Image (tube, rainbow, N blue to C red):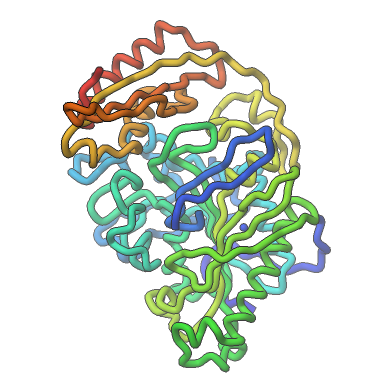
Length: 449
């Protein structure tokens, strides 16, 4: 069995089953767009005292004031004048909402069903779901073998509080601290933050759930001292891979009912070998999670060099959008009672759209030239749009791009889809936002056309 650690336990019980590098995109039914989330990781009110307790920020954060779940929602924790700080107010306002801990919220319902499944397994899994969203670069990247030049570490992908701390980009950022604490089996859920494109399946704040299991030392005794290819080709490594796949196939059956599945090899810096799992649902194959055998170097960095095990990670929004047939990721963050009244704790129901307000379209075009043509990063533009118009932006698409044959200057034209989920927008109010955006674009080195 797995050794104790601070947190909430999921205990085994005899109930039978009723039914988790690169940018990764999951195919969904025809009624939904793809749910895509960047993956340096595997690629969203209080908990009412049911599932988790807050844990202090890792000791690798020096001089950090103590934090609690109550203080996470204070935007001033994330906004400061440090030259590396790139957290905008609209992102700081999202932190601490705790959607994954709300028992009657779709994300909380999916999270609870995953925990329900792990409670049926013959091990005790500690649950962590109220940790500080501020982590160090060591926790988020270095401890997971994510190299310094990885694009996920760029300020264009990540929200930095200062040079050394950031809003976590994945729940894997807490893996090393829990392994160091002595936890052998645990689940970790929380909100994560990444700068990304804008459409109905992308949002800069979302939720992940991570799972880890270390095997008893006696079961891995035959692999003592093995490293690299000797380890990955060993019978013990194969045993871990088989257990991992069986565990996650059972989870998918628990969530979706018995369904066809297929595995393929993948790459993550923190697992070797690594896999992705797809399921056949609504007549389509959908990627649902990434996983693998924990890399031996990650275990060494976590002060557990004598242990072996597996880890997986999944996006809660992607599962919730499929299970509840929710068409727009922004809906998870709405306060509209017409959305929240449709969901009850423990129940999977089909979301009923309560309205579809008309969109307002606005184009914006600008020149980028010289060094700016090579350094222009779309995520910076997308974040500028979100900072200006917030959740009124439904989608941004590039409708024209060309390079002038004589001057060598490059032109971009983007079409912005404005649509409120709660009311009809007027052309006049969107014009105000559009002019604000135009005034802000030169800060990116762009020349308006």
